[in-house]
Image (cartoon, rainbow, N blue to C red; front, side, top):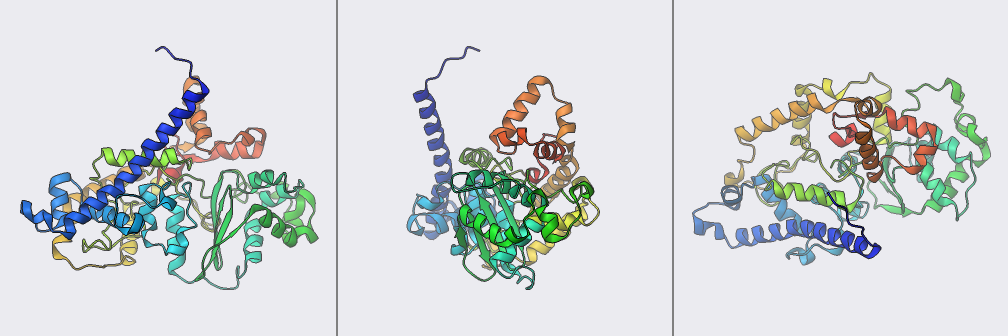
Length: 450
């Protein structure tokens, strides 16, 4: 194959064209929802002898009742004026799966979501909103930040191993949030970190933003009195020396996110608009036949599952599904169970629990066919296959099987997805953590595989 030298202008134009195409894919979901709503509102489906919009969409286009409902809900929630073919500008960079997950979020919480936010983080935020957390753990923002560092020993020690000012604050951000996207939940707070800001929500309150410089100043207010360089964590919290810290204790430290995105959305994330768009392209090519969960307020008469999409067994291309620091910390205190060992009985139990939290907003009898027996059987089979095939081993074990060319391509892809940073190559700890991460048989992080 002959390669043609590309000029800088050609390269810029190519990227712009790709961005426009991907934006067109996102807009198409809104246009589809708009058309379906018009057909439903005017009962045009009756002209072809159908009894409902769900029956019409299934027969004519292979769209299940749930996905039909979601197309319509996305249009209702995110289109200009709530009834048009165009996405509102503030949602133009988000992918369809992100928009779906956000349907049950309050309007104020949606401002916490960015294109790189993983689908799992959005789900975690919804779970956080449902049950009032226990007080006395992290009741104000200072306690939240202190707990974050307590759960991330190496980050705190690395921060106090250097000095920062407003000109070098990016280096501080790199230490605290190396993957560019992470979440943390503790006590009354849920916090998300991005490259451009830190946003946090107190339970029952509206989200607030903080600059990274403000986050650094708060860090100093909390720890300067007990600062001891690279021993600050031990000096402040009274922990053991680094030499005595086990591999298990440091599993949640800097480098890969405890939710290591990913997301969220392949879930191959990189958090870029391009990857989000790729996911949407894939779903369009499939014709939208897959059912992403129970239907919502569009009137299909089914309960919506907050963890919608998990049951389908299909990977999402937007953000790697991440786990919060609190979840990871809890898991490190109990026996590790490989994803391959998770029984279908457990999966079914989780599905039932999620279904119980859904909201049944319509009693239309014709639309209660979303979970037909063939669809249920196919989904359960997909879940089993996913659980069995998900695990491969560590990233190093996966890379040992690759040829030189395959390894080069794989590392390049990891770099593009922001899972391997340039700074990681100069940091032995980060590089070692990256190599030891669990991946599936395709080399994707286990959080992404979900």
